[in-house]
Amino acid sequence: MTDAAPPAQTRRSNATLAAFSTVCLPLAAFGVALPVTLPEFYASHVGIPIALVGYVFMAVRAVDIVADPLIGAAMDRTRTRFGRYRPWMAGSVPILMLAALMVFVMVKPGDGPLYLFGWLLVLYLGFSVATLSQLGWASVLAPEYNQRSRVYAWWQAFNIIGVIAILILPAAVVQLGIGDYVAGVHIMGWAIMAALPLTVSLALAAVPEPVNPGDAPHGGWRVYVDLVRRPTVARLLAADLLLGIAPGITGALLFFFFDQIKGFDRTSASLFMLLYFVGGLVGAPIWARLATRLGKHRALMTASLIFASLYVVATLLPGGSFALTGTAMFIAGLPYAAGLFLLRAMMADAGDEVRLQTGVDRTALMFSILSATTKMGHVFALIPYAVLGWIGFEAVPPPGGNSPASLTALNAMFVIVPALLIASAALVLRRYPLTPERHDEVRRALEARAS
Figure (cartoon, rainbow, N blue to C red):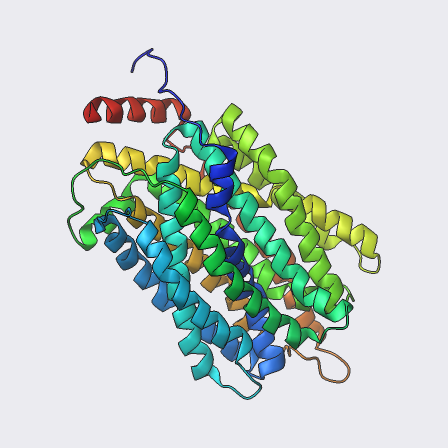
């Protein structure tokens, strides 16, 4: 189109990005607890049958998926002197603190599925408000292609730090003799409640929120359909769905797999998951740098194929050796972060393209669509809970253990299905149209319009 130089890069300081990303610490704790800790906790310790736990989580996710576009559209219409996203971030704090108290701390054995459904719904809605406002806020901090990768790499690094911290807590409580696993889950809830107001206050005080120019958003559900049908957005959503189902299955079945297939206890399984996420933290800068060299979609394709291969190797290793399994899980985790932050940076790029073509900033709505596919992935990821319930698998094994058929199903769902899904994401992105060169053209056109 033109040989003009790409738009100048605006670089946010590391201190600004760190302050912004601290909010990820409590939000990431929710993010790992919801698909990993809580389903197993409510099945094993609260006493709700495992299949019913899966149904409750899927039902809440279904409601939450419908709510996400409404929240995103409301954010796009928000105009205050404090910004578009910052008021929503502040408003999410009391909702999440109350939900954390009821879901993690106040629950007791015998509380039924209605208790879980009600408070889980409050938690998910508050979580949606917080995550969508943060993702939208991140998109305006750095509008340039490569700097946007940097912003979301910081975001993902703090997400993984939050995951690691919250995974350490239950195991540390047990190992230090403070309490049992149930006490660890309670302390997890208290830690989230303490971190939420501190981190959000820091971000609100230290981080600016630039505002994209554009007409006021308008239109109804036809706008939503139009966005989903755009080639750039459609490929991102398909890749996100595949990459959301895969780790969701892994997280939901992890404790059962390492306990009943590999013969490790809960503490060892928690440490394996911890090493996996440490690998993701170590690997995040690698994929951010590769995205600068190759472009985000090519870096993500590469990471997905490597991820699928390493995951299969790590999960098929024989049990019995903690050191071998731990090392394999760390290596398998190296590509883990790539999809999480690159897809969000790519959606922010797609938001620029939509703003150029329509004159309207629909960033929050677009992130709500991405969030919806992520949550759909988590819904599908809980289907194995229902399958295991149908074939007689029990969270607390009966004398003599679960049947060979149920253990075979568990093994297949944990190893084969996630690997195939991750590899499929690379195929979806083969003809991704929003290359670095195309985004530079979009940025130049937006700057020309603004001037």
